[in-house]
Structure formats: structure tokens, C-alpha cells
Amino acid sequence: MHNFNLLRSKKQNKAKTTVLSMKLPAHCFLASTLKSLVRLTVLLLVVSSNKTKGAVKLPPNISVPAVLVFGDSIMDTGNNNNNLITSARSNFPPYGQDFKGGIPTGRFCNGKVPSDILVEELGIKEFLPAYLDPNLELNELPTGVCFASGGSGYDPLTSQTATAIPLSGQLDMFKEYIVKLKGHVGEDRTNFILANGLFFVVLGSNDISNTYFLTHLRELQYDVPTYSDFMLNSASNFFEEIYQLGARRIAVVSAPPVGCVPFHRTLSGGIARKCVQKYNDAVLLFNDKLSKKINSLNQKLPNSRIVYFDVYNPLLDVTVNHQKYGYKVGDRGCCGTGNLEVALTCNHLDATCSNVLDYVFWDGFHPSESVYKQLVPPLLQKYIHRFA
Image 1 (cartoon, helix red, strand yellow):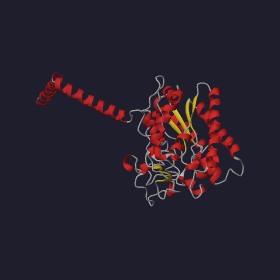
Image 2 (cartoon, helix red, strand yellow; image 1 turned 135 degrees about the horizontal axis):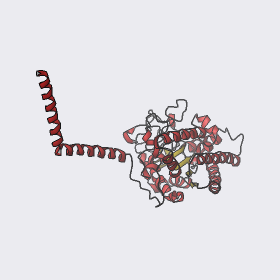
Image 3 (cartoon, one colour; image 1 turned 90 degrees about the horizontal axis):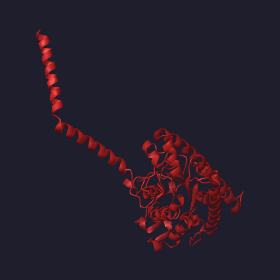
Image 4 (cartoon, one colour; image 1 turned 180 degrees about the vertical axis):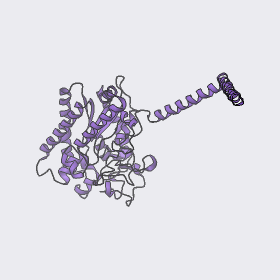
């Protein structure tokens, strides 16, 4: 009996506590609500912190949910980092000295590369991650990734020689990306991202400068006009392949004036280290054919918006008339002597210039972050309306 009364007493006390807790909560409920609001606010801040304030003015009928990049070392944000058999790597100092945290990430630059500046200008996010980054999170996929690989080209031999990821390999990564994206956001949202995202293709410089002129590997088989046709055929096939996979807005960036990079000026520019005109002439021929081919593809592929971006002329102007843009040195890079150093030969054993902002080029091949920041935003603004 005593045990029964004790048990009943405990139940009554528990009931009282329950009743009290039900009656109490004006302030308890308020505290709980505030906690929920704080959690929600923090979550929203985390989500919004991944976005940036875009500087480019988009036409009223255009939204850009994602940026997807194919290309070479100009665009690579770290896909070659774990490829130990390629010399086309830059995940070591002094690369990245002006990147966030001063960390070398595999970007062939002192800081950001065009892939990053594009997503920043569009207000999507601060950096474009490499697809092969082992720390890549699923929530990055809907806003875009980078498939570019330093050393690659339109010509399969270019990528093979550099042990880079060829266009076929970058295409395979894109196919895998689509499967992952569908699993993450569903098929309808995936189709929307592919149809409305911006695809950038930046290739051609390694083909002409390395595979044709530097190593002479293709010079034995082709003259310049036929080699440019060979490149063009590969490029055109690739554009059609990504179109068939859902891409509609495709920005094809021209090949740059490779004859004016410090590396080629040193090797082939004579005592005065002038721009190598025959290299630039080959680039101009290819770019002219590329531009015309894009016009015909737009007629052929329904609802396609393939846009030719001329980077040749703006970069040539910055290089040749560098003082007009506030630079002191246009024919040498900031890394080492500035004459030849690039990738593995631009390393921690090399001294760097005292002020990279004085230099058009960071190393023997690649412009500095400052030049990219001058060139990319106006180029994007110039051509963005053509994707409408």
C-alpha cells in the first residue's frame, strides 16, 4: 500500500509539472521561437554568404543560375592538382600568393583566374571550384564547377603531350556532373540549369604555341591553315556534344595573342624580345574561322546561343600598350626572371617581383589577376545580351 501511494504521488507530481509547463510558457515559447529564428537567420546567412553582389548588368529576360567551364590553364581552378605525372601544375608557392589566405590552389596565377571572376561578376559565388577538388560539396553543383585542365587543347595530342585532361575527359566529367546534379536537385531543375547556365570554352593557345610551333609535332603533318581547320573540327564537334547534353548558352573565347607571352618572346622574339608575329598570325587565322563556324552552328542548332568572345584584341592592347593601363612591365612575368618560368619552373626557389601590380604577366605564360580583373568584366558586359 505504501508503495502504491508513493507511485501515485509521483504520478501526481509529474502531472502537476506537465500542467505547469503547459501553463508557463509565454516566455518559454518566446525563447523557443527566438532560438528558431536565430537558427534560421544563421542558416540564411550561411547560404547568402556563398553569393556575391554581381557587377554585370543582366538584360531583364536573362538569369544565370550557374557557370560551367571547359578549358586550359587560363581557366583551371585545380583539376590538375592530383595528377602527379603532369608538369602543368601550380598548387605550390608562389602561385596563389594573392589568393584568399595566400594559398596555392592549382590556379595558374597569383590570385583569381577568369573562372572565379566570371561567377563573382554574375553574383553567383566568390570562386568557381574545380570539379576534381576532393573537398567539393554537393551544394556547389547547382551553381557550377570548372572542368578545365592546364595543358589541354582542342587537339587531342596537345593534352596527351602535357598529360592533361583532354576535351574527351572534360566531357566525361560533365556527363558525370549531370548525373550527380539530377540526384541532388532533380531532373527539372537540372534541365533548367543546363539550359540557362553559361558554358565557357577557353582553348586553342596550347595547340598553336606548343603542339604546332614549340615542339613541331603537328608542323610535320600540317601547314598553318590546315592545322587551324583540324582544330576547328575538334572544337565544333565539342560544341555540338555539349549542346546535345543540354547546354544552350555557350561562350567560346578566342585564342589569345600567344606570340606576346614572355616565354615565346624569350625563345623566338630575338634580342629585342618582340612579339612573335607568325604565332599571332596563326592565332588570328584560327580565330577568324572559329567566329564564322560559330555563326553557322547557331543556324544549325535550335535555341542555341553560341557567342564568340574576342579576347585577342583586348589582351594584345594591354600587353603592347601596358603603360596606358597602369602597368610598368609587359614583356616579362613577375615570377623569377620573368622570361621563361611557368608551372613547375615557377616555384618557391624563385624570387618574385616586388609589386605584381606593375606586371601584365604573372609567369611566362599567364596574365596576373589584375589583368584578368581589368579584362573579364567589360568582356562579359559586352557580350551578355547575346545570350537572351
